[in-house]
Image (cartoon, rainbow, N blue to C red):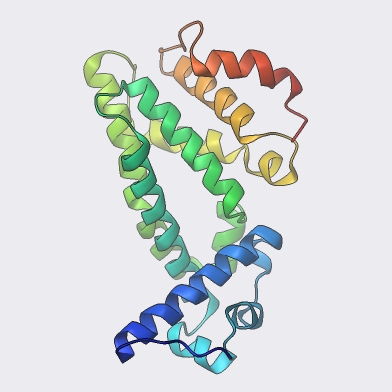
Length: 219
């Protein structure tokens, strides 16, 4: 096992924890989170299983930490990439695209399968970890409703529906039958029309849809 150079024990532990979560990220791209074992993670991170269990007592704890890391990355990316003063529609398009990029970068089972694998208690904790991401979406919907760009009867229910539409592209994305660009254009167009705010002619969504949606079976 390669040695880790760190000035303090705390830094050493932080570095090791980071290596473990990076290992989960790499494995999720090749075999999916549901198929990853603790042995796989330890091997990929270059540590023993004993060391791994010192950081994460079980797979549920490991997946919760990984989910929190991915959620934080999403929030940072959204805030970094979104230009100041963007319209609610553009904010929604950015949200959809980043969500789809995350689904492709970190493949994982659907909510029902993940809930069965983790158990009800861990799944509830998982839902709490992704709450910040859901709040971002709720904020987009609220701002669109306030400006008159969106028609939203129930923000929380609408947010769940939008996430469900995004999640419907999980399998096509992972299988390679659709690109992120095509999926983002399709989902954004569908959601914006449902909210009463169709994409303007010539917008990135329309350009992508005309160029790619007809060929959405290609990667």
